Length: 268
Ligand code: 2HA
Ligand code: ZN
Image (cartoon, rainbow, N blue to C red):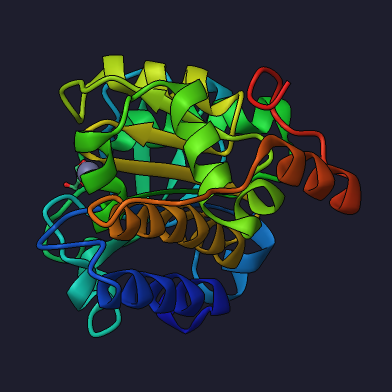
């Protein structure tokens, strides 16, 4: 049974933590994980396709690759209890048009409505980081709140988050890309996200949520957690008024201490 595989256990544990933090109300959020064939093979007959589901766009660059993905309409709250209904494991068909379902969505379900943004972001990240395995989308509360009160540009948002917490520039020296509000679940937002995620491992969807990318679940969860912490500090201090934030000199000292290559155009 695939649900006994460590990568499935880690996946549902991560989803449970995200739910616990209040990031994934109702069916909010979705995760996709690129899985090595060798990690799944001991648990599953990879020749046995349960059914095929049209992807709705061309994913030829991912042909033959395996993904574990959350289902559309499914709740993070229920993931641990019932992975086989809430998750699906599929291979992208040779022509890049279909998901070949090998396990999961046992109630007849299908992948998240955000599948274009997920698979297009996998393609984009793999082109700049061959180690990338995870794309994670969620709705952290303070991050969303901040998009209502802060200027929503990549430069302004990145600068503020770096100023709000010492950890920020260390954990995301590539900054955060910020997209304007767009209708979710479309190829258009998928393409915009994929384009942006080439420049940074974090993409913010104004008045909606965040996308994170990286090599494993802990890394991406930790990345989003750190962004959300900076947003929380911003929102907590906003009504009271700040008497200081990290200065450009402070940020430059962190760059030196941790030997970082920070995103250009923010502190110089
Ligand atoms: O449905 O978060 O963006 C889950 C979502 C859509
Ligand atoms: Zn969402």
